Length: 102
Image (cartoon, rainbow, N blue to C red; front, top):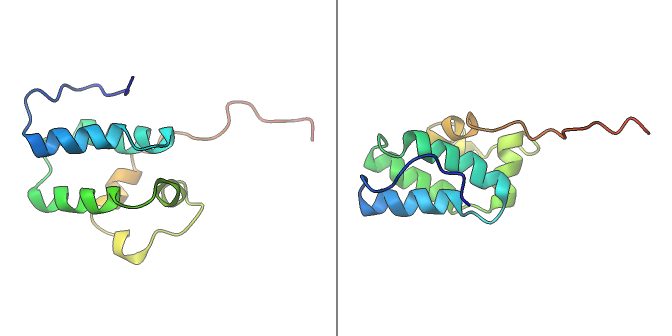
């Protein structure tokens, strides 16, 4: 199950491919971030923005999730443009239960 909420039937092949790749990253957290972003935005992204999204998607998931959660600073070349919009789709990754036994 991907989690996607939209059909890809009405979009061009490049957008379909990107949508699929956003929901099949390798780590679930990035599926949720990139997938939610793609569901909401894929249809309206310009060709330049699609190029930028593909460049972002080429980064390692472990780096991306650290940038999104603020564990590591976002590299300068991703501080502007599409990445901040993608990071805005970040779900709450905090633990459901706090360990009060410590």
